[in-house]
Image 1 (spheres, helix red, strand yellow):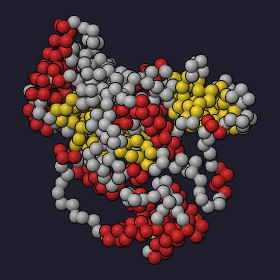
Image 2 (image 1 turned 180 degrees about the vertical axis):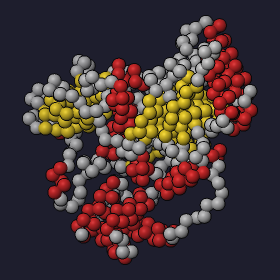
Image 3 (image 1 turned 45 degrees about the horizontal axis):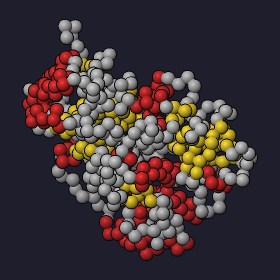
Image 4 (image 1 turned 90 degrees about the horizontal axis):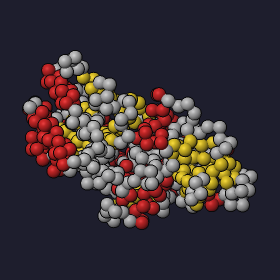
Length: 540
């Protein structure tokens, strides 16, 4: 049992990118013996110690015995009792709308093996360093989670399992080794000659996919980071035999390692606090709901009829949502090159919406409204992330609705321990237009699953090159999906859907005026969504 116990201890600390020396390993075994920890509780107990050790400011990759002793003493002092919870949860004080330009920038430090807060104020134009850092961060963040995966992470103790481990190689290790098989991790791109390549931090190699039967599940686009296995040839190309998406790391695992990092800028919480909030939200706020609408075309009269019916139903059934998120486009056709009359009508439509909402005082008193711009809406920039709708068009709406927020695209809702990412873009169409590899005859539910899997496996909302999807590289961290959010709203013109992948709930409310007046309701207590449909009378 000693060897098995040591393997568990080493495996847990390795997950947090720490290695154990003989003294630290012996100390931890003594702790387990001292407290008579049962075999089935060993991993949980060591996880608690490793998590607290990782939060120490002076924690090194090689575990320090003195710091480990300090962590153990601190855990002893905490005691087993929990604070008595007497006050009910206040949802108002735990609801935040986080704009993309407010999020702090955290870059991956290869030297320290963790995230470091960027000390350089980001700019809209970006710099040469920020352009390189945005791509490098994407690759290194995925790579560090892969190296923690049990199929890639070797134990420091001799074991038969070592024979089944997969070892990642770099492009610089290919030279002079023709005829050998390699597994590489890198970004798919086309070189100057138009050939498909794989790029990593050390170089690039041309891919020969002629013998690839079909790639793994997912959508493989230019700019996507992929695991590629193949044989290096005398011609200097990699003859691909397998291609797959990087494995996704669930939110709990990432939070257990980087829970001390405040990615959203609203204060970090521990896993224990998260679990307590989750339990109490489920018990005390089971009737709290968020509404999500997309393509709310204010230039179409049916939109106002549908919104009025939705508000009437809320009042009649005492079902008033905590948050209503309206995503663009707020116009059915582009007015970027429109006439002055088109722009004036765009302005007046927002005024009319303000009058409609203000006519329901029960809703305006309790509901927070969030407006997310779409591709056709008038904002101060057209690259992602996008600024909010220009304030000159929304002054009357702001005056009439007290709890209102004109957000960026994308933006995030933080509600207790939950993080909800809202992104309005025609993601499905853009991804399919730029796919370089995909399984044949994929459609329907499989296609939707492939899209969601790709977005979450890539830990990024737009896994495309800047030539395909221009982004503000200094704010690329706002498009990042690491750690994995609780939910992602992929508001898209594509038909509505919902599914859960790796513990993250993803849904598309669909266009409000598509086949029916449809929207989605999200229940934080259940961390799931349901489809809402508004019945229209024939005369409407």
